[in-house]
Image (cartoon, rainbow over the protein chains, first blue to last red):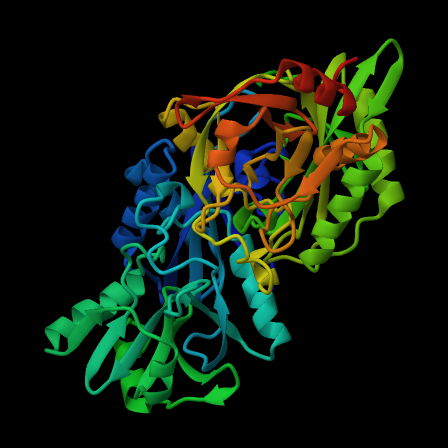
Length: 284
Length: 284
């Protein structure tokens, strides 16, 4: 995921030099991880630009900001900056567009800082060997504890990246978080979908603290249109071994089939993978 | 804690313009809270500068970096940058010195970024009304889960600042975190010390995920010197109501007596407060 073709936009200023620093040393987004972000997929080519599910991502971004008691997201201003930054991106085909909202400097007067970052993405739909790692919290820990920031896409992702490093140490590609009481939750940057006996299931958002996945919602809507049952329910790791297929899905990496859980192979459902990939908009 | 007299140093560059941005938009310290920090007290005046317990703070900083699999802390380089930045600080008397180590840019080649931030501190030793808030994790959640980053002073402090906002909503000044199984842990930026029947106690570090407090260790060493028992043990909230005194202690804010827990007053031990304040080096 290296490449210097990234483009940076700053709210209120427009596209800036991507190699020039944009954030003060005492910005609370940096010093405390106090801020939020979201990420959406850019598909570019032949003079055409597509921003997948922009409304849903910006709505989630605005919700994250509200749950952090931050200044509200000015949607028209963000849309304009996203358009400008994506237009300036020299890349073709697949890209990501990340929006970042920080609380601004701690020790000097200053507003929140809004950033847009556009760049290349790695290939989507890559099969994954996952390691299950506990979050240390039971599946209902977030129900009455809003300060734990369940469902908020914050800049405090330190545990998420540390978990990915732990997975790599275990020879796995990604993480599947499990609650302290033994339920499957989500990946550090993706949602879980499991297929069994013609039913699709994903982790419920309520109480679990997991992020409401735009991609899982898109798949759920497609399932409803195609008359397929889509459930929100708590699942245990053992279910993965009797499932017809399981996937980690995200706006940037698409629909990634899980092929191994803690070193044990699980069933890869090629046809369902193809269907979900198409439903998620990654088949074009 | 507002004031534009803050000074910024950058590792490898020295003191820079504090009002100029220093961090790239895609620095992982910003976008993921992927990095660590530490903070120590600066006492300045009459041509004399004191950096309280600099060795202990830098040792903890180095440990945080190691636990994040980051490049090691180059102690002589950091010491030199701290000295240079503190020397450039126009403030007199009390200040803080924050050291920050980020993983650097994600999408362009680049090294870790080291920052030193020096500025004014609020008054120390302020009495506190605290709200107890759950972390959602049992007191042993961190024992076998290093990816949860227990004891690591990371840049992912989003929950810590959200908890402080929740405390303010409840009319309290600060937070006392409690584990899901009901034990007192620490404040978002401070350690807990409780006095009862001539014994001082603090939360044990092992398994609880709390930060190893430099100030609590300084007080423990002083207690040993004065023949006073100092225990590391798990305590329950009810103990605060039968204690002779309880304090949140930190390198920057000193020894703050807790005067109220969730709206109920607790005993303020004026003499012990004075002793602990002197031991922590805040009585001069």
